[in-house]
Length: 193
Image 1 (cartoon, rainbow, N blue to C red):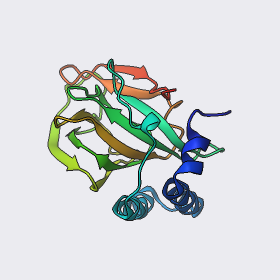
Image 2 (tube, rainbow, N blue to C red):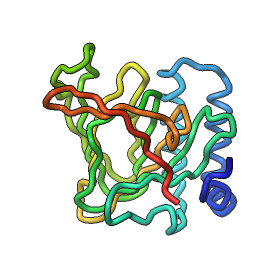
Image 3 (tube, one colour):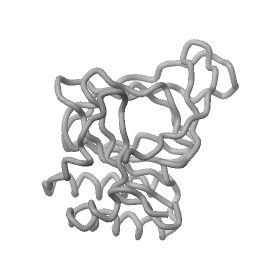
Image 4 (cartoon, rainbow, N blue to C red):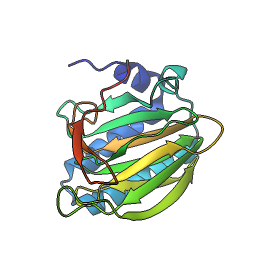
């Protein structure tokens, strides 16, 4: 399946192609999630520190909602790399990923509010803290067993993050939560075109 922007971004941004190759190697080692995400966090920190430009087509906010542009999607679906963009005032619902993930901020400020993953359905969520992430900072946003948060643009310019997930995040069904009631709804963050 052809994914929009994937080939164009990799061919025009050597740093993205090199980072994708490193992630492919790490994923292929069969590491446990915590070791794998720590290693990807290190690689993404180094990649962002090297300095590079992303094409405007994958950093452009959508006026209606946050968007995810594919930078690389492994052919076997074992991982994906996305450019996630929130315009000023935009954010996500409270959600999970159903896989591991590492996020590095390319530009702007991202505000992440974490919640304790509920042990039972229909239970109000418990907050677990809020952090602000700025350009160059990288965090392990989720592992399969620790995976509920909400993200929003925290500054006066759009935020662009480089997100790495242990699946094709543009096709993966995921949970969103009503934090007040714990009610779960399923959704898919389809790839932007």
